Length: 471
Image (tube, rainbow, N blue to C red; front, side, top):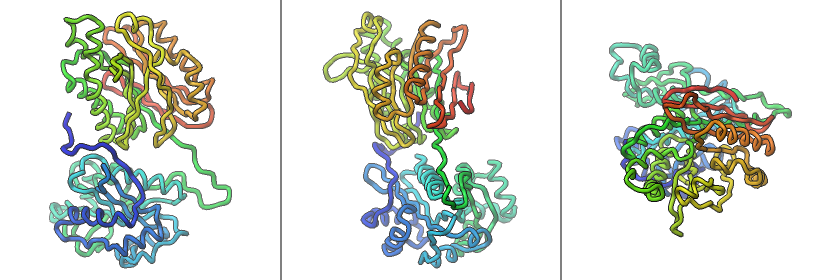
């Protein structure tokens, strides 16, 4: 798996503060090193924060500002046709901003060159979309450059160039990114940025429509939250190294991320094939050998969560804690770079007899950017009290990674998970591993209550999308 050269521990999207200007100006220097753009002044940033604080955000990586997105609110009738950047910003005085407008208009987005390739810009665009929905605005619009057009200007007109970018025959660093984030080209504008020689003074008027938009009325009701979950039915196969294992892990994370899922769930003991390295040892020694991988596995999952902008529930794996005892644990790796550990409380008789596994004591719910969640590993879901305690803490989604080797055991976990969903009126999602020689594949299931979170489920198996749609 290719690693980004910069080590990242935490990613945060937050509102811009005037105290950030010194760091912000340093990033400006790197982004606009060719001198083609005028830096934002402290006074301009201060005015934007004053008139529309929610619209000004920064991306912070390990306490360093590496990205920024600025926006204003304008009236649709003023931007639906041809206009220039100077006109829409009032020559950068922002006197065009109106709290009564219905369009969120983007006037700046950038990412520090050293932090590109980590999908950080997509996070800021997702924030803008959520803000657009929260404020009940009609759409997001802005003028987008086409910086690679100068290479083709003598061969085709802008319309043909845009269509070929849309068909992925030509790559444009700005337009390709915008199209992949669900923006569409409304029209081509001329002289949007007079000094933009790369785009030959053209710009695309890009638009993302808020499907929840309602003309403002006193009866307006915010839409329900939608959460998309990817379930990985992990097929057991031989892996010689951790790199081999994570080549397959990243395939699934990438696939689920392409569906813009909020969570991806891996099963219990998904890393078990790495025990083959310890075939010459006894069972208890082999499982402790497997536990040596756990810290690095967690770090790799954290990097994937950041890179693919998705919350990862890592299933479970053996782990030797500071007390020297062996536990069955897993991790919630959030896409902001933070993580939490959960433990299996009720270990099975075989886990005790063969491996010397100990039951954990941690029982917590976890806040995420989508919902409050809980995780119960396999056998734990058969004990109603655990999920009841989580529900009392406000749990909305229960995840159950598990491993069973008989149809009876599988059915027991599945039916108990359904019972927990009914008892606690929550959304419950579970998945397990499978083996190639199994006569039938047991798929992950999603159980949804009436009302509350509206889930969308994706189940991935053997490298293919096996099922999907609304649950």
